[in-house]
Amino acid sequence: MSSGAAQRLQTLQRHVGFREVGGQISPPPGAKALPPTKRCGHKRIPAPLVAQGRGMEPGSSPLTTHVLDTASGLPAQGLYLRLSRLEDRGQQWTELKKSCTDHDGRCPGLLPPGQMKAGTYKLSFDTKGYWQKRGQESFYPYVEVVFTITNETHKFHVPLLLSPWSYTTYRGS
Image 1 (cartoon, rainbow, N blue to C red):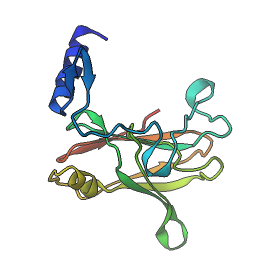
Image 2 (image 1 turned 120 degrees about the vertical axis):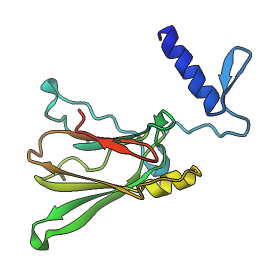
Image 3 (image 1 turned 90 degrees about the horizontal axis):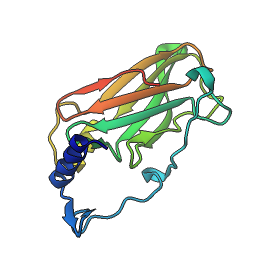
Image 4 (image 1 turned 45 degrees about the horizontal axis):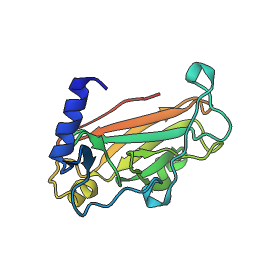
């Protein structure tokens, strides 16, 4: 790590309450260590891609998301979300899954392999609940990201960069 990056990391750690004890960085007093597995009962599932980065290996999740809290510079842990698909009949949204982000801000297993089909999908993020848990006022009570999948054999990653006053999303890889 470059000295500039190390200095920024130390500044961020001090900002969120970490302290240096005996040359080691320690969490704030009373802070609980994060478990190695995902919160909300989900495990972190790696999603390797085949060569060319477009297809999927058997068993990998075809749709993932990753949320970063840009106000703190940390992953957005414990953000609740819903995945829905727009059905042709009646143009109604059908909820496919409820989940929440893990300690790394990821929600890798949104759709099991073989369940993705071409169509319009929506990820709804409960941003109000996320910011309220942190004692932070926010402008957007929820964020909905609507996207179209035309090839169900590809992998899709939908990142969300989030602050109390703004958000950004894009198609990731």
